Length: 168
Image (cartoon, rainbow, N blue to C red):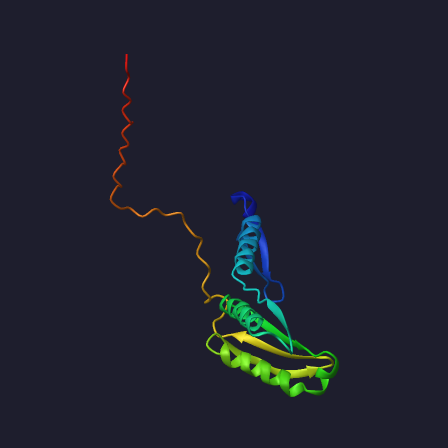
């Protein structure tokens, strides 16, 4: 019967009593399943963990610059791993690194939350910040379009050529 119509006889449930079969175009069915799987992959979001490293003796301008980078990453929907590196005698003062990380967490609290509290690991202290907005909700930067504003045309400057007196 399926051959007469040009379709395939597909066994849907072989364990059922009696087995369930369906007449369909199997190639078309496999194609549709592949299309749905491809669409599902496109709609997935990939969360990226960005890493920013601080020194314990960071200058204020450098701190502000790195804080701006962190805020930009978080607004884009990425997680940020913030690491403070301890060098030499700084390793005996981990509370200074903890204060630096908590100060940073308070300053970016409008776009982030602390996902993992500061934790000392060897010569460094690490904290992970998560974005308040999910990646799908984060604003995508709009491409800058070259739009010209329509305004009144500027008056053309009329430049008169200087008159030259010719003597004969």
